[in-house]
Image (cartoon, rainbow, N blue to C red; front, top):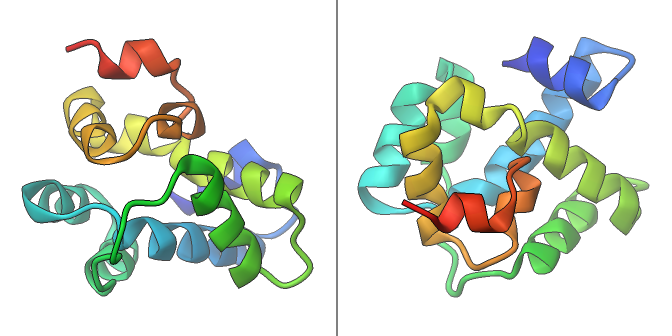
Length: 128
């Protein structure tokens, strides 16, 4: 997974790709609940699964922009543009790892706008 994120985001080091992945998955972990959260954790590598499973559910759903802004606040020196890059670099590799069915189930729990962060057109993600 880290190698895919590193390639997708064109990060210069594995350590940077790991940091970005941890930050984004930590933010995502609070927004995916129930069976989808369990299935997501099972589909990911062990360390990524721990990050997802360790998060307390968020008190309210965040819009995709709020999600990106949250990642920006958790990343030293980040701007909204770099945070969006980081989020898309991590979430964009998930469909290949977890499959289309689980990706659709995860997206169904999230407000509109997240599909683009997963590298999908919004309409395609909602059509099933």
